[in-house]
Image 1 (tube, one colour):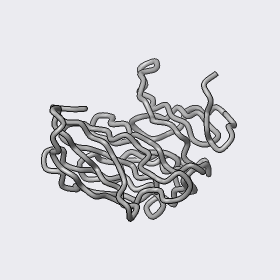
Image 2: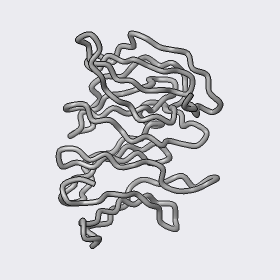
Image 3: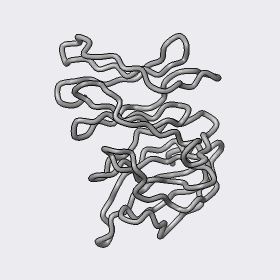
Length: 187
């Protein structure tokens, strides 16, 4: 819910993802198709839209990150994790609500080229990528903290808890956290 609108995702009968925007009174504001959604076991849309500064960001279950103009519903840009980063979806596919950190959108494609990436939130241009840990994406939404004067992005991949320098993408620390299929139980 942002600026008088409610944003949700869904899926059409032909497995296409759909962004729905409703006014607070429940009237439909717009419907916008986006990339294909997951059509395997337990099909459907997986991610919660992230709304920031007039933009809406969605990650499809198949790993496409899309940016829409919140006012018009027009697509601004999209990037597919597999095509752009050799990303690797976890068993139950991508389920991330991306983090907006100032001018950057933080996304976890996982895979063999990078684990986490920062993109310019307006253009989709790559700002930085972490080194690859050769791990699939985890079921986690990144957060940012200030630790001793350094801004860190905290997130998880399939087998790791990561502290990532928010300015450079360097990984100053990594904690091994093995979990079945990347599902990290709260303990």
